[in-house]
Amino acid sequence: MILFLSTGLYLLFAALFSHTIADNDLWGYLSFGRVFWEEGYFPYGDIFSYTPTKPVWVYHEWLTGVSFYLIYKHAGAAGLQLFRYIIVLATIYLIYLTALKKGGTSLSACIALIPAILLISFGYVPVRAQVFTYFFFILTVYILESAKKG
Image (cartoon, rainbow, N blue to C red):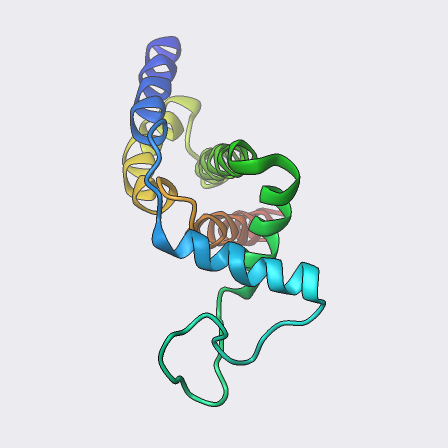
């Protein structure tokens, strides 16, 4: 039964995460990351805007740009995809471990992965800042469950 369910989860994973959508924000992440790594500063104004912006501009996803540009510079587009797959698998594994921490069996934890994979696929198909959001959210839940149980 576990083998059948695992095969089904793999096929679901492959169907949901094997295609890539080029998100417009990715180019912004890479551009601001390039400014950080190559110019040595982070702009406090939108230097890529064609229209005037506010005097102080807060780029709330700056760490994503810094991380993605570093990966892109050294490993290219394939490196970004590999990073996305690693983060997706780590997130799914943490969901599984958290279900076990809550007292579930291996079978019930695998069944719980089905809706979880469907829901997180919306944030993981393009390479976006949400890859960090989902990963660190479930990491926080897992750490809280570990602290509660231990």
